[in-house]
Image 1 (cartoon, helix red, strand yellow):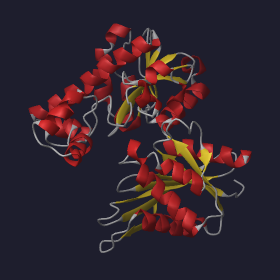
Image 2 (spheres, helix red, strand yellow):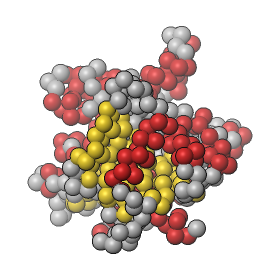
Image 3 (cartoon, rainbow, N blue to C red):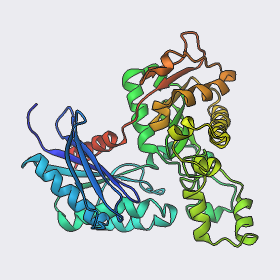
Image 4 (cartoon, one colour):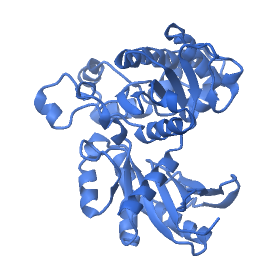
Length: 394
């Protein structure tokens, strides 16, 4: 492989920054992948090469790095591993692009200001997404940075799928359904276009199931509807998030239980979902291993909500040709896939139990009217591809 420059992808969360380094050549090969976790309380850096071997590791037990400092450490370790090979650009996952940003965009300080104005729409995600951007603007302002948006994929939805039944001035002011996990859905649909083009052109329900979970209905690779709405709280039950909830519950909690907005936010984002129902864990693997009835109830509710929402998206599509599983639970939990597809037998899907224990490809029987698939997602690679394209067109 001819040595070229590199693309660095950063995916910043509240207490971690995931990163990946890709060759900027035609093959876009992964070079290194890693993360700094426990930012603010005892950071831990680990970097692995493309084969999964750990090539760098460091802990700061007595140093509370913030996102700015964590970004600086990633840049320093990346430079050491690249040994003089140049970084051509940084690609960033940014959760919210609002109604304006419908495609990746090169970042400058004016763009940062616009993205900061969207913080109220994603208060637990957007500030952390933008922290590495600011750090790199300070440390290396000459290097291009590209923002890739989780909301952009869903801007193809018809307006009716985006509207709430609220006064028009609120809709015009940005209170609408945005949808999230768009980079994952984008990668999966492009992967299907390359490997199963006939399927990709059809009507699909894609299930991104992980600690965060959502469904997306696509037709010919375009988003038609999504379970997530104004925020990433809506829709499916998740690891620690409640999903769809009667708004009256929030009024009751505030008016009758005296809960503050901060307490309600903590409840909805961090203490509900699988964790809240089970009282044990937000991790599906832990719940599957538990003999506690509450663990089984949490799993059953998770599956039930997904099956109901698949029915809703089937109606939005006017029929379904395939159901696609992706992300942590979707790719790795055969039992959850089996239980979901059992609930979807009315659609005409028939699971092949042996194929269901594979890691990729079709998992339905040959005679299944609606096919079922596992397609591993790779949001970082999607960002790298968009960043390379943005560089080529600039």
